[in-house]
Image 1 (cartoon, one colour):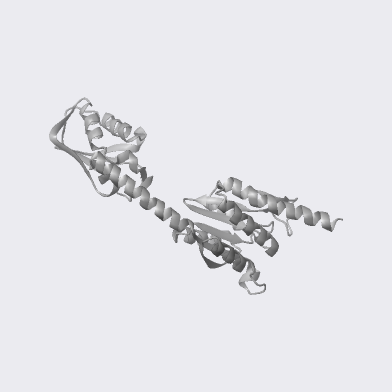
Image 2: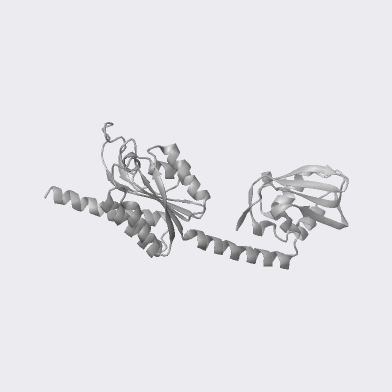
Length: 297
């Protein structure tokens, strides 16, 4: 379980005296005790009776620091040139204050924190927001039939779901709206439309900016003509940012319905992003192949 140190990255040891001690050795010793890399710990202040350390990272596994005061003090006492008094101790503000906990108390804190985190994840995972996309939807030229269908499907699956509005045909604006949804604590963010090959289709690109490792399987591919088709084809996206799943579904209503139904089924099966993306894409490809065969039959 990782915690954000919230800028409180410094702790200090008191009742300690140094005599020609190597500060690099002190940093390396603390880093080793906390399971960090050598370069992630630095001695930032030495005063009579006090040595201050800074952790050069913002996030840290709680288990790495909780109840580690005794282990750190014993390790430092073994460094040449370091003398610890009988009242030596470690002090810090914020999360690093966990260092000074007794081991039993640290275990209790970690267990309680893990349970709170589990409850938060469970609550967030059932909060969803759905976005439509496209200038034609925004202008009211066509009816958004996708969002109502998806919202109803989500509610049937026990989600608390809301409509987030219509996304502009602009990748930066779309990224900003999706980032707002992440910050608002939604566990599932769904977009419809904006997954095609036109130069106004940006939903997949926006998800890739937020999660460069997002899965974006192709539904169909073709050679761009740079008139209408500026991209290689149509694809969907399934990404993950923290505990939030991001999904880009197609815009045509029948495809959005099919993609939504597969998404709900995949989520109920507990599929991870990669298998989930392919689970949705396979059904959409099958529909396209069937439609092409019918049109050429």
